[in-house]
Image 1 (spheres, rainbow, N blue to C red):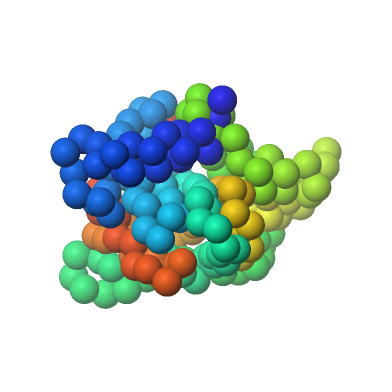
Image 2: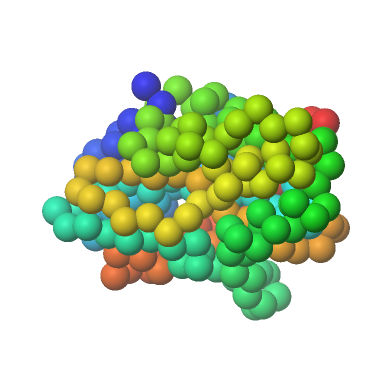
Length: 211
């Protein structure tokens, strides 16, 4: 079992009002030393966790989405906006921009840090199995590149959360990249507009990377 089964379990617990929470309230839990936040609205569940690794100026969030409704739902990276503590807003950087940035500036350590951090969070959580996420994208784009920049581009292409149309019962996952200064903390509220609803998740300072 992997992370989408965690989403299914979260949906079930939310439906039961677990634990003593009103419907539509954020559920917090920890897995593999990461703090996750999950929220269901209009039968679609979104789960996020802030990853410890920072790649260049990007803070990285892992996002998983499950469509439990009876109709298709489309979710886009631009649906995610960080409302910072000072009231300013930072939208998710478009995947194409992230890829271009890493092609121009990535080092070998950037590639290793990005892939390792994301895969540890994804595979280290024993209750997720996406139907249309990173694993499927990785198989289509990852090749044994010897060029560091090409590897960075391929890694970012596979990991980045992209616009996805989810049919009923489908799920996806990916990384949201927030462009902040290297010393800035990705704190505040992550607001997501999707499935005709507004989702809001608290963001705390990410744990220090173990590099």
